[in-house]
Amino acid sequence: MNAPLNRRALLGLGAGLGIGVTFLGGQAFAASEGDLAKKKLVVVICRGGMDGLSVSPPVGDRDYAGLRGSIAFKPEEVLKLNGVFGLHPQLSTVHALAMKGQARIAPAIASPDRARSHFEAQDVLETGAAGVYGADTGWLNRTLEVLAPIRPVEGLSVGTTAPLILRGKVQAASWSPGKGVDESARLPTLLQDLYKTDPLLGPAFASGLETEAMAQQAITAMAATSTMNMGAADGQKRRGDETARKLGSTLGGFMIQPGGPQIAAISLDGFDTHAGQPGQIATRLSYLDAVLDGLHTGLGAEWKNTVVMAVTEFGRTARVNGTGGTDHGTASTGLILGGALKPGGIVGDWPGLAQNALFENRDTAPTLDMRALFKGVLTEHMGVDRALLETKVFPDSKTAKPLIGLV
Image (cartoon, rainbow, N blue to C red; front, side, top):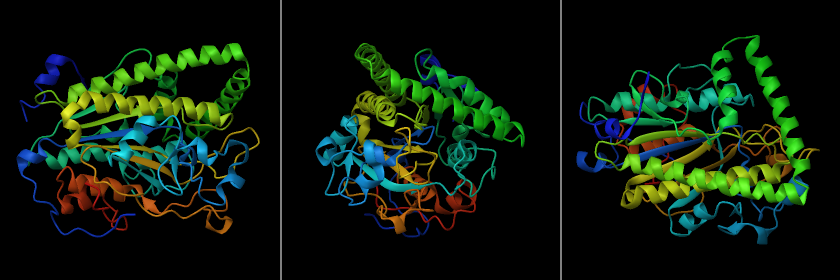
């Protein structure tokens, strides 16, 4: 169950209760309980399969332009990070934070799932299991569970329904922003949860959603060629970004209240860009950037105690398809932000886009297990004991060694 959240309830939430990859031995920090009580973690799930090569275009990779064709960025069009990578031009907030050492990219990150199914990949992402349907609770909820005997930590889900990542034995608060936030994705999300274990309806519903998404994106792409429609779309985009910025700032405001949640999860939909990708992804990344901008503002001075991770269930194909989009792939780009983050370069390794480096000759090859990122942040930032991390929070994850040195 997820309790509704209002200001009064929020104020009383706490009253009752590259980078090296190595194994950690026990607690790898000396933070006091008082320090840990200030730490904040936000996980943003970008649903639909966010295209990592659009989030952080590797314009310095010699194979990038040939694979991307008509949707490739030119080096001067991106927000430069280093000699290889830039950020999508709509990610101006992320870029500004990166320039201050408060944002980094993981350009070849993936969950253990390789099926390229929204249902399966989102399940693995949110449960933290080694395989599909390997757990029926979310890894963030299990984090709350293992921390409870030491210091109760409150969790908050943002959205009309609690995401799987925060479902489990520990009751987390919930806040629905109301109309205007990804309304069109609500029913499909509910039906996905209902049908995901049905061997007949599950795959059929998934196929139907993908077909509908492809058709809708193609229609939108064609409509965008009209100057009038482009003007209307720009106005809609501005309104959407303002809504997103308010969403982020309100969440930040909740988290800095006395007894407010230390852990939050929020889902953003619409990243399934099978057709007309440039316009579609620009709108969604602008929305994501606005959420992060609002969160940064809303947290105020507490930004220094915060880590934000924006991840997706899978990436997309390295090659552009025949409708100016991309199809379901494997590795994507994860964004890691926050004032608690240590400055540095890319997180993980970049495999490159040469044909012999692609995963199954089609996708960006994964070099970093998403669980390694999650485990490292939970251990170093939130103070989760290593033994509990391995046995309770991410069972069967010994191959995903905690990524240390981020915070």
